Length: 310
Image (cartoon, rainbow, N blue to C red; front, top):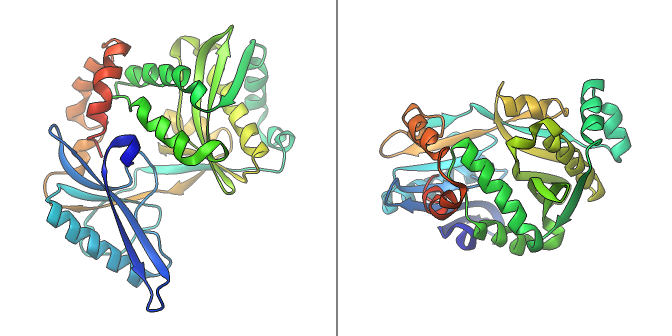
């Protein structure tokens, strides 16, 4: 997060009497003139918060985080948990989204057979188009980022900087992170970032051009991403978070993804954490304005805005 977003890190750790590490809480200070200061574990990522198997250690780490939040005078502390940590200072939480994860079989043929006939037909129909798919690193950053920036503009969301994705590729290396770019007649139409970690593959960012929705480019790309995950030895494919019942939730559910809890907990010092959400009522006018901006302009001003949003 230091190289990618420029946030100041604070890593809290707990050790046993013998000196063994028994708990960890990575935090980032997110601050900007527009929104103020926040302490987050971790920005951009869907999961963060306290990492420990012991409840008393979790409480102690949250105690430290609360104290740090007071010292830094932030608006709130945000911990992106999957399992709730019981602590008296964590008085607000968000559970409206879930992690969508798909258990993977040993080969792509078995996965394809597990799909409903409608999904198999959609994949087959999309494959009738002359798509090409390429996996790689920095050499694909330009086409991937062009797709990503365009999609974020269409959604009305400020885009992250190219620097973030470059930093991710560099930090994880070719074994841990790669980009996927799908082309139609040579033109990039869909792209994704893949993170491979032990037995799991995650897609933290993916985009496709709306003008090519009728071709099924996004559908075909996700099939290739699933094939790639199996090739890399993953047993779980993480589609990321979605609101229950939303369009993205239904898209992920049709592949067989299963919902897992996401419990984002807050120690609030000032304001309301909900005010920072994109679906907040006071953000709707800004979203409509952003959707009308040229992509080149959103690339210039978007990264400076979004890095300050927890």
